[in-house]
Amino acid sequence: MPLSSYRNFELALAFAAQATEKQMDRLLPASEEPEARLYEAMRYASLGGGKRLRAFLVLAGATLFGVSKSAALRVASAIEFVHAYSLIHDDLPAMDDDDLRRGKPSCHRAFDEATAILAGDALQSLAFEILAHEDTHGDPGVRAALVLELARAIGPAGMCGGQMLDLEAEGRELSIGAVTRLQRLKTGALISYSCVAGAILGKAAEPSRHALSAYAHDLGMAFQIVDDLLDAEGAAAEIGKTPGKDAAAGKATFVSILGVERARDQASRLAEQAGRHLDPLGPKADLLKQAARFVVARRA
Amino acid sequence: MPLSSYRNFELALAFAAQATEKQMDRLLPASEEPEARLYEAMRYASLGGGKRLRAFLVLAGATLFGVSKSAALRVASAIEFVHAYSLIHDDLPAMDDDDLRRGKPSCHRAFDEATAILAGDALQSLAFEILAHEDTHGDPGVRAALVLELARAIGPAGMCGGQMLDLEAEGRELSIGAVTRLQRLKTGALISYSCVAGAILGKAAEPSRHALSAYAHDLGMAFQIVDDLLDAEGAAAEIGKTPGKDAAAGKATFVSILGVERARDQASRLAEQAGRHLDPLGPKADLLKQAARFVVARRA
Image (cartoon, rainbow over all chains, first blue to last red):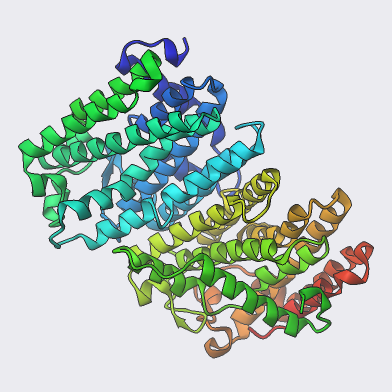
């Protein structure tokens, strides 16, 4: 059943997760070469877990523009590999020093630090390899655009820049504007890329791209506020990672600045606003609207 | 003066280094954003040092196929950014734990571990961003090919795989075949990419690409044998990094397996053989032939 025929968001998310997982498994098979340990670590950290929200966003966006499922699944996989790389490096002792990820030992705990660093490095390269391969799209202009936009989203002006801000945020007073910018770079840029990747694949016209960009912006922010709420309130068993870390590290978050109530209101408002950006796309965008509501209601 | 008009290799190398350095400085300007520290670390680790042999190989290869200097310089910069990323991560305490690089404190010593990890990550992304940008080549097929081949050269089946083998080599007996494969992945793959990048940019015909690939293979191996010789014999002041590390780590190298004399002979034979692969390209390949001789004669 194609994703576009799902009317229930949670079923659609589960379907997207399963299909992407299968594709990722094919794109990153186990190795029997002497360097097999690297592949093991890459597979350990990227397969078998996660909500795959980013993959869902790619697939749902792709259905809006008649993109082939196989092309969308390759891009979804590339993004999930990048996401896994970022989590491996974030969890390292020199970074957030987290022993737990997706309910199991983080990569450097299951393997060792050096292997974890390398696994993250290699996952980043793998993502670009997938995007640039002709199996992803017959038009090299589309492939080059996919690479360019991903590189921008995760480089110094995107995810890495956000992580730098996050490291420097420890024990500092940050304004709401500074926290917003930090999160827009750290998590927002990759979520935005996930939302517009389908439009790039489908060579969508500017108004559609713009609608998806605006949706992605609000969705990403709502997502992050809820992450902060979950970190402040959550139990490790539910969220699959160590809770209360932000407070322990003295980090300013949306919750520490706005308080729980206002943060929750803000997330709901953003999710609703995100959905409205998609109105011009008609009912076929319903799944993405549901995704925005899900992001706010999620418990993990 | 264009690179192709240099008859003296060392002048040509110096020219290539200077032109690439200038281009890298433009592609990675200092930042005044709050995440400026990340840019500082990236610039610290990638600018102001190194022989820029890989950049030279790109530029010299590009002159064979009439590629514009600006295109070649962008690709040369991307490769040097990747090389810098790999050195930052190799030097980390969890990896080779080296305090010295290019005669100054390694990135994690000058900054801190977290910043160094991020700087490496961001340099990798930056390299792909440069390659995929339309300023690098008007034909998106060329850009996609540049990205694809770089990703393969530095991913799990290339540089990262080689580094994994290197980590696992500590204290183990390795055959000459195993060491050869390790080095082919760890340093050979990126050197090969540097040699063929000009052919990709110039859409060179298969025989020329093949000649350059064969040249690159032998050059890369000769380069690595000399690296091992320098590590075994060198002084820190000359090579700009800590010498004697391989022996201290109990790592098998070409020198530990072949002995100094045979290793030196082998390097010379490979350099000569590398040059012969370029005979079909005529006298315009002389600079690359000289590069092979230089690689063997170098003292740092």
